[in-house]
Image (cartoon, rainbow over all chains, first blue to last red):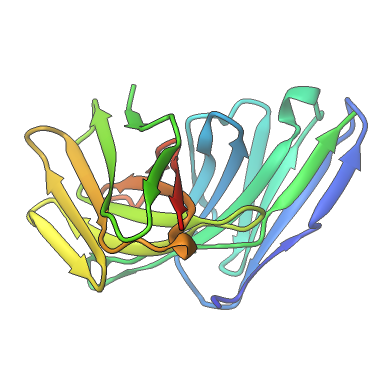
Length: 115
Length: 111
């Protein structure tokens, strides 16, 4: 399995509180992604990173921010959690070797419940 | 905006038959397309990648086609087995490696 770890794996938080999810990789891959997965919506891209300090928004970025201060860590922050952000969050990593795209490897997921 | 559509209804087939899953997209010109398998409670796992200049790719019992004119990919599992039951996701990527997923299709293979 690719060396990718998400933490925490489960979290329950109250509406209005800030929450940070962490994704850590040991593969030295350039690209990192945060997705959320909800029934009927599949995987939706929140933010992705194409290098240290280089990030871009995905299709559902409102209410989320990210930071990548070093290659191995990609943090996802919910500044003020809302119930609509209850979801399963997946981190993924990928690489592009000599202009050849490779597959994405996914973490185990974080189940976040906002009450 | 970019849109990727997969069969929203579950696909039920008999063991030994060929399963065919569809991925259609609009407002996008991907450089490549990927297929993933996802089991309950787990993250997706990569199966196959096909590039825009390729028509077909095979890997064991899996076959993927990619028609950039129709904006469609077909994913085939031949001689399907109950162990193939899972959700299958297609994903599109471009030069920036920004990876966008479809909603997925649940495949159930009946023994």
